[in-house]
Image 1 (cartoon, helix red, strand yellow):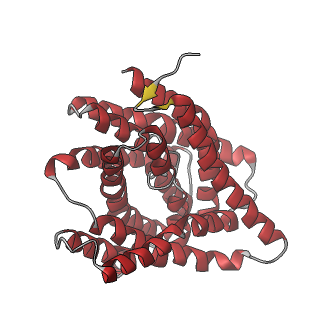
Image 2 (cartoon, one colour):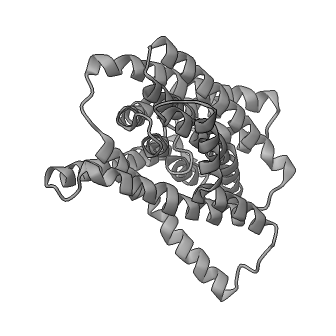
Length: 329
């Protein structure tokens, strides 16, 4: 058997990491469905868990990660390429949704899952497996994910979801969406996290360590809350209705995005490590957080959650191929 290595971890370990992360998400969703069956959880709890993600866990994670970052101008290029990749993917998603004649709320959900992948959940796990004991790789992943995907999520995706999630759109509704976003805990956490990153606070201070530990516990709850939301959003959708959307999203999310990122990395001459980390992050399947944002702000959360699960399953075949491509180039 031919083994391709990055650092000390081979491609088979990479695939096992993907399989394990996928299993955890699917298992949590199945547990949620089981809890639904026995009336421990119900669809009425969806709003509660959506708000726990967007107003509790995600703000903690945003502040925790950004406040510890040292922003170096030359390290922002991969993040900027990621932003460009997401914008192109969202544009393709919008065009595909229009061609499929999706209604307003379904179109909003489809665009969200087209652009935003699981870079900060599955992506982090795979980066740690592929680049074992390499803090530089993890730092690059954090910058790419938090600044390249996270910031656009807050600045673009949430206002977009608010806009398409409303029944009627006029100048007042647009202004209301913008105002709501700037008052949201996520935006406040974004601003405070960036501000604190420049203060250079002593990391060994007992009070600061305790606060960061608390924020870490809050942030780590995002995976289970997100799985709960996806499980509560899942509903029966006619397969004939879903197949065209799955096919379109497969081409955009799992094929086009990593190839666009790879092209951008080569165009701007990124170092090999940053190149590989960027492509791996861009190759992640549609993120559950995109489905949560879709549901939280009134878009078609059921469609988004079904597409997220489909992309996770299909990514078992595409991510190893993209990985092998980046190693061989």
